[in-house]
Image (cartoon, rainbow, N blue to C red; front, side, top):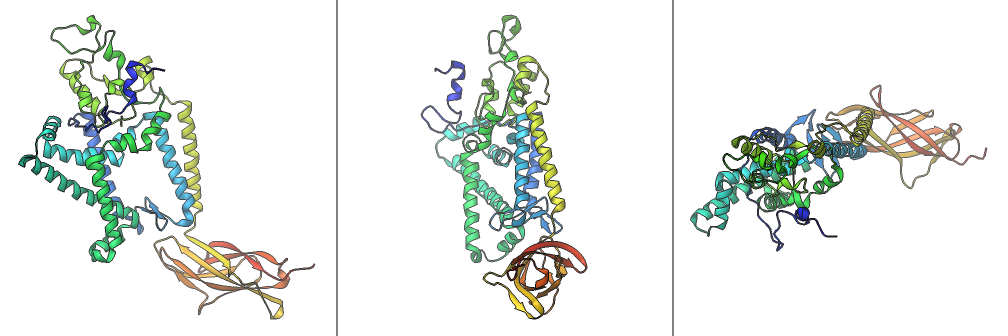
Amino acid sequence: METPKEDIFRDSIATVTTEGKRAWVFPKKPSGKFYKYRKLVSYFLLAFLLFAPFLKINGNQFLMFNVLERRFNIFGFPFWPQDFHLFVISMIIGVVFITLFTVAFGRIFCGWICPQTIFMEMVFRRIEYWIEGDRGKQIRLAKQSWNAEKIRKKGLKLIIFLFISFLIANVFLAYLIGSDKLISYITDNPLKHISTLISLLIFTAVFYFVFAWFREQVCVIACPYGRLQGVLLDNKSIVVAYDHKRGEGENGRKKIRKNEDRHALGYGDCIDCFQCVHVCPTGIDIRNGTQLECVNCTACIDECDSIMDSVNLPKGLIRYASEDNIEKKTPFKLTARMKGYMAVLTILVGLLIGMLFLRNDVEATVLRLPGQLFEHKENNIISNVFTYKLINKTTNDIEDVSFKLLSHKGTLKLVATSNSFTVPKSGIAKGTLFVEINNAALTGDRNRIKIGVYQGDKLIETTTANFLGPRSYR
């Protein structure tokens, strides 16, 4: 089936030529109301991103994703390997929230919140404008031979880009290994931590490659979220849209002329100035409709509003709108699909909150020593040996910790000089203990016993273990 002429643009992406080569995008420097709002949001998020791994709440790093040790901190709340199910639920909530947001408002996350867009458009691109100038000057510089001016500008940009990439790599590493450990590595001799230094240089190279060369291709080619957009959007989703009804009229778009009654001639309000194309960071023509490459950055809205203002035509030719709003003038309202996602999100958030309230600060594991059966002592006493492991999830030492047998009458002894001990903050206490129970209290050769963990007289955790005894023939 032959592709309709008006949809041919969908057969390729704007950043690749017909020969399959990279079509470098030189976007015009944006300006306008939405751009000012985006700058405020971006600077706030940049500050958050840079300082979050160095902030602490109750001694816990505000955000940390230590994949190697499987330790995560989210908003100062620690997740240990034993809490991995809570972390998974948190991630699912994040995915459902972004899905709901996309169904309702399109790819607005990409244009306003995504770190790739924020760093690219609000840091690296702005430095590029400062050094090389706006769109026209950048195009001329790219075509220019390698003289002193080009070497100076490209060299300065290279140095600044590398420095910022190195800074981002350090912050990224702080999220992975913890800010305290990173600072200790920095203040120490780097040669003592070669593996970390190599990782840092690799991250620096990756970030430099992404922001200096790969750029918008991350959003267009690499990011899976762009592909999801086509599945999640529908006619009721609010996106950055071109009002083709108003822009095309009956006879299409046309360059503007003085003292011409465009509406009487059947032309739309689009004056075919191509400024919306020139300002787009992914190089698309928004007038072709919703496209994979569009990140909803609103640069085309600001530019079109500026042009409409200069030719005395109403603003809003390109605006936040749904396809139904443009075609049928219907207002935004919650759809059944949105309500379904909201219901799922509410259930998941409620489940997470409930599980967080039930989560203990101490995780106890008591296991029978491998390879050991039981010992038959005097007075019909059966003894089993166990190993224990206590995990302290708090940032304070837990002192005067002891065990008590809750399910059976018997004794419980630690293999130590004292029956109480301390579990260090964010640490683990391990040891061995003996449990002795009268055979008359046992039922069969395998019994489930319940052990309580106490801090002083306060019960802080309970756990169970298998207690072996002689086979009963009763």
